Image (cartoon, rainbow, N blue to C red):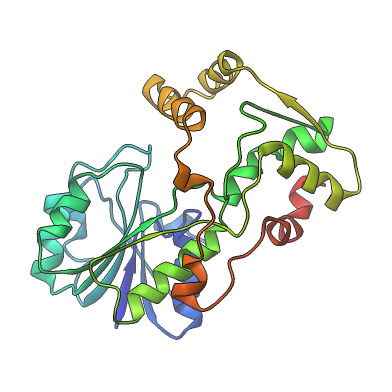
Length: 272
């Protein structure tokens, strides 16, 4: 069984590739820049772009399962879902696992309307890897600047999202299901800054930004206005699914979800 992993060099995709490869599965990794992909030599890395479905025709040959992103590289929902799914069906793909992007779009609708075995993975919460955005300010100033400092979020390790995806792709019994995923505890940005400081043996100060200050900071990052508004609105009106801890990772994979403390230990050099 050869599995195609889209977004293979991203936060979750690269973990999906490694998890499947380590379990002995044949993996084909999709990238818009294959030469820059840092993946095991045994993994077949191929060019493809989800916004240009015609590039997927040779890629889908011999594929039985797909880990499929539902958004483009810029974060916008893909508008090519019907074309992608039509090609997948024609190629004989049997199973698709979709990584939710925050709203139901063309990929989800086309997949649900097909005869494919599909599963939705919904990590409503933040990825632990988002915390890497703090590395520079922690290293140089020993400070974290974020808005909504006391808003809890059940942050999840990206490797746990990948573990669920790999399990669903390689085992029966998951078709037609939607899995909401979280980490094992709800933490505020203030909590996370404190935990990083404890791991470093330093006092890390937390400086809370106003909503306007956060908006201006994201503008300097050249983010589109609609993306900025979406992110701020989401944090300001956090859905209960983002902070309500659920045991889905263990239920699907048999393994406890990784803690934020474990993630910090693995990435401590990034903050030193």
